Length: 258
Image 1 (cartoon, rainbow, N blue to C red):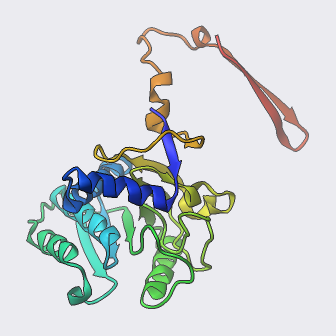
Image 2 (image 1 turned 120 degrees about the vertical axis):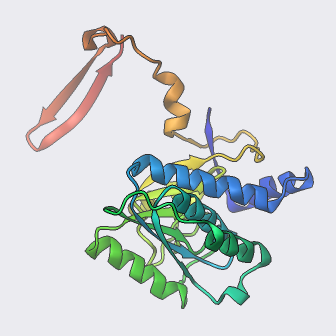
Image 3 (image 1 turned 30 degrees about the vertical axis):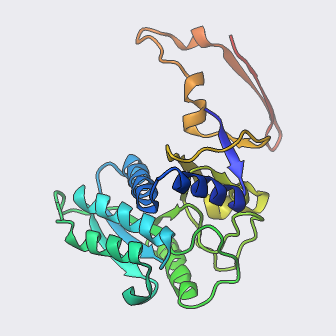
């Protein structure tokens, strides 16, 4: 399955089309947040500690749904809101309440990995970052650098322009980006690699996109190329790879596939 690269306008159009078919914003948010939580647990199956930074828009709602799923799975979860709860939209306030009402299932007292979920700003946000978001981004980057936190960005790292790939100097540096629905153009810009990290698309069943010229390779889109092998298979049955090394390392590579 191909993964398209879309603009912010194309993403909004896909959402509006879903709403016109009767799909609610909450349904999309619940599916997105569940997908982000699944991605986090895929990399950290033993659980851990999560610090969730939530803005006042739908991006924050996605992060709070993720937080509730992690809490149910036995994670130690703390949520930090970027604004007063009264300033949040109604759907976000509902997700805040649902997170609070989620009973903790602490199955592991030895919490190891620290995971930070960036749900501050989403689609449509532009550099330059301003307070209080700016201070939270700096704190996130400090925790990544000094405390070894692993950062997951919801949809896009805060401080990145989803269309142009322009980056604020204090843009959150993510290790993983769980982009919602489809890959955004700014995420695959040449200069965005070091703030996007590993990119995974959280597909939403209700969103459809017209076929475009640009696609990205993801684990999901490549999986069909890697059929299961027999347990008794041997490596020489599947081709050979030749590597040519120069004096300063690998100068080129060629592969021969059987």
